[in-house]
Length: 298
Length: 298
Image (cartoon, rainbow over all chains, first blue to last red; front, side, top):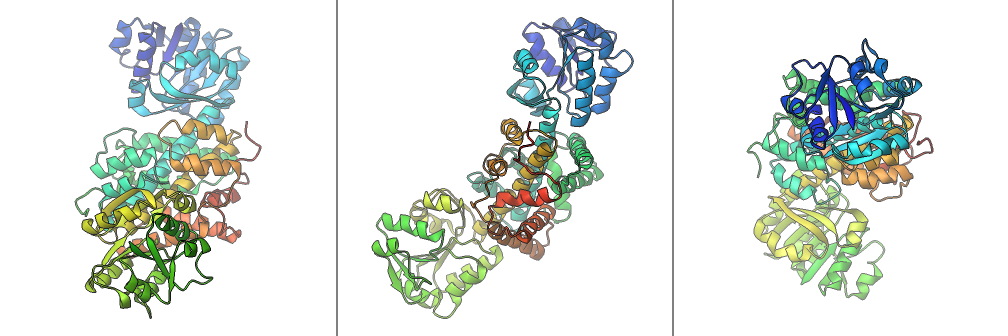
């Protein structure tokens, strides 16, 4: 299939690689530093604009940083919409604003295109291993038509609902992950401050209702003081911005999410924008005069 | 073995039943309403005081509501310490204050007794199914000696550290569970308010880093509006009191725990002390003018 892929960063690059490896013909548009050499070697064409990519492709995948980036690529000068043929499907795998997504979908559909929002979780490791969780919003027929492409990049691929529902699920995912990291951070810090080995507490808790992927993975990172990303604090901050902006526009109170955003701000204040999000515990440690995973364990 | 069992409530009654079923000779002391008939039928002796129970037993198990109850049974008039023989082991399976526990252990050990704190999680269902998670603090030799007894009541039995470490782990467990319930509540409420089916969001999220036992079990309860306990809000409130009192005495800030305690207060204000703790979402719903699991799903 002829697939346009716009956004070849840390995530997009390995995702596009999986598509090329299965024989899909990829194109992209001018890239800051030229497109990755392994994709050019695999036959990726480099065109002059998003509209040129759209004119050439049956499916267009976007993997961009934020809402304004997606808006610019779709609707800006030389944007996708200018080259869009009827029946072409846009899959936006970026994590962006759910309400804006609904507007984008309507504008694309008004021009005869199809639109699926399909943000992912699983980070760089998930992208490299084609093991991303993909949360989709759109029409069931469109979803089924592109599911074989999504399966080359991820597992756990769910159609959550109509347009925007994938982005809503992604925001929900980021709320749960952020607040669960805080939960684990407070608990392990309580144990450490009380002189109890946080590694043994983590082991004990994994057997019961406190068990979670975050306790398993991020709890271990806190104990090992291993804060290489993983998923960067500044990106999680952006995702919680989406949550809080959505809460404000819908009329909804998210007290835990708002408070956790402040902890991320405190990490940024310490120069931690590029720390893994498990380093949120450092913001808690500031006001505890103690750390998880130091040598005060029993 | 001759085992004294003091505290035959919702939890203690089935736990003692498992011990009786394996042929252990149980005794207790005067019970408000007489001891449960099935335990009397199984040969449980009813003695006049905790000290009489202590004099008769090789191991004494406590399963009491709170710190003052344990203190009274151990050290009050006619308390355990008055009848305690050297070498007798006290296993306190109540969930009480970790710092007080260290003091209790020292007083018992000064009289030649052994002390293990062994609080549980898993609730009434776990107690009935002998599937409790048991978090222990004490000497390894004492732990190993009574482990066969603990195995009749639970799975996932961990020696977390020295005296008090079991209670510290239990507090940590309750922090994680409470804050994760808030995480799931905020996420599913965000989805519901955005018009997306929270059940589908839950399904999508279970595939990734947001996966947890709480998302699985308590998320489902929120969606089904099924708030029969389970674990009661007033009991979780008590456990977070222990966390916050410990934080204050140790000099430690637990902002998420403090905020979640306020959500539990808001449930109490609505008459919800006996709701399941997953009903914490109702406190969030008050300021959202929306509910999780109503019919606004897609």
